[in-house]
Image 1 (cartoon, rainbow, N blue to C red):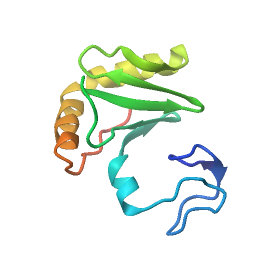
Image 2 (tube, rainbow, N blue to C red):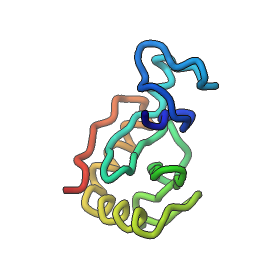
Image 3 (tube, rainbow, N blue to C red):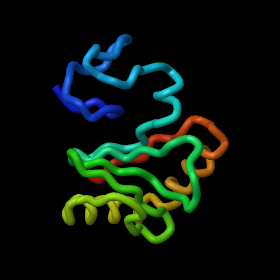
Length: 119
């Protein structure tokens, strides 16, 4: 079993019905608001639609999470272990243009484009 992307509780993988122990109901609108754009080395990257400025993305590694600015790759909120933060900042530098494109799409509530993980 792996953690739910919404409530971070460990339970069966999501199907058409969310596991009954999860306090957050799953609906189509919830998944549209929080799309995952990449996943690598146990790190999940996503963006909310729409979200407040400055342009940023969210990253989760285990129980750690952070908001990271796209332009300068600094942690705006939250914290991550140093190794995970290094991987995320390297990935963000490689995909800055794609992240900004996804940010603009998210503000227009359009579908986001998946971004390749770290090799």
